[in-house]
Image (tube, rainbow, N blue to C red; front, top):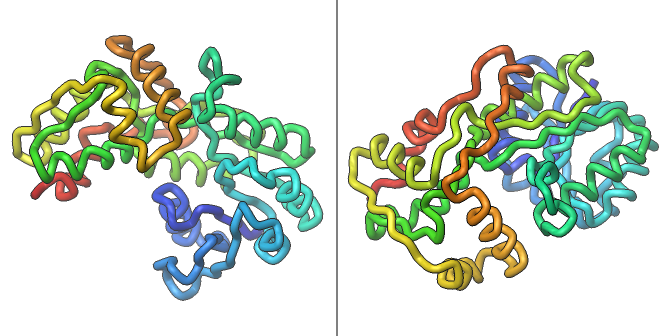
Length: 279
C-alpha cells in the first residue's frame, strides 16, 4: 500500500508524511516543486502539479491511496488517471464552508464542492475531511504584531473554532490507516469557539507582550488584502466575518471521533508559534 500525499510542502501535508513514515507506511510526497521538499532521504518524492495533467500518470503509478488537496481545475482528468492507476481510496482536504447556507454562491466553498462532487461521481471510495478555520490563519497577523504590536480587523468579534493543523493531519492519518473510518464526511473543528480578539489575547499571553486590537472598515481591510487574495474571496470572507460577529461557531467532536483524543487548543498553537509574533 503506497499513499500519495499531494501538497507536501503544506503544513498538513508535511505533517501527514511524517506520521505515515513513522508508522512504516510507504508514502510518496508529491509537489509541484519536489526539489524544494525537506524530507528524509528514504521518502520518495514526485512532481505533481494539479494544474498540469501531464504530471498525473507518473505521480499516481502504484498508489493505492491519495491525500488530495482541493483543486477543481483538472479534477476529472486526475480521477480518471487515479482509476487507471488502481487507486482505491482518496482522502480529500475539503472545507466546512461547503456546509453553510449560500455555499453555491461562495467562491471558497465552490472549489471544494466541485471536487467533492467529482469524487462522488468517480466511483472511487472517498473520505471528506471538512475542517473549519485553521489555527495557522493567525500567522496573517504576525507581521503587524511584530512591527507595531497591533492587529486591525473589520470584525474583532467574529467567532471561529480554529483547528490545529496537526489535528487535521492526525485525522487524515486515521482514515488512511483504518478502513472502517472511510467513506464518510467529517466536520473537523478545534475544541473552542473563540473571537478573533480572544485568539489575539491568547497569542499575547503566549508571547508575553501586549497586543492591541483595532477596528478598520471592511473596505479598508479589503484594500489591504488586495495583493494577497482575489476580490471575490475577500468579499466572501467579509460576509462570513459579519455573519459570525458575536455568534459562537460550531464545535464538533470530529477530531476526537477519529483520533480518540481531544482536539488541540488554540492556546497550545499560540505557545508553539509564539516566536513568530515576537519582534
